[in-house]
Image (cartoon, one colour):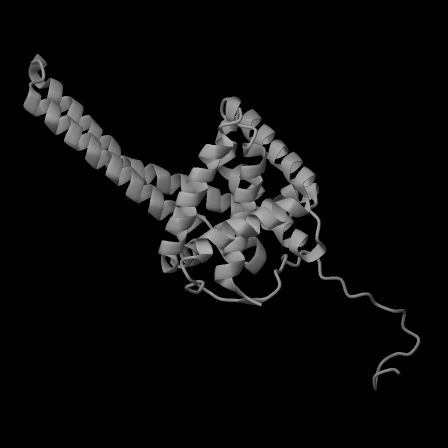
Length: 264
């Protein structure tokens, strides 16, 4: 039935929403929610469940990801693109995980979905991460430089006190690296998912990722310990176990994102 005032002889018009961002299902919780610490183990279980659904596709996609990463890393100047490629391909893996949850199978081509969906914000995320990494390295370089200069100042042979001071400085440097890495990865961990699935800006995605991680720091610690142990075991049989563990790791990040940020 025609609406009042409409032209009954007009040709039909199809409504097409070009460029609409990819959207995940479920109610989004900005900043995430706090879940039980035991969920850190269940995130790995969720990753394993995803891998079991399409093991062959997961392995092929991870090999393809690795080949692209190695090739771009070995070419001078082009290796700078890895800073941008990592979050863009990571966004594609997130979309692949989300589509697998909906459809029950993994599409290898989704690895490149980040180039069509939110390429700009994902690339900016990579550049921001690089800038933060350089910023974090400044105090580390200063500590190391001052320690080496003090140790060999005046051409004198270093005495035990100088050597002890240098080792103390190295310990402080290692601590700074650990703290800076933890803070940076907390801001980046869920950022690609929040960009491609919820249309957040790179900065807002990093803030939300940081908040979600620190609201679940204990579960994240359990997750990190378990993943470290599993990665070690995976490397024992000539590293072949990594063909399984790396896909499980990527899928587990998506599982953690769904657990923390989505209310079904």
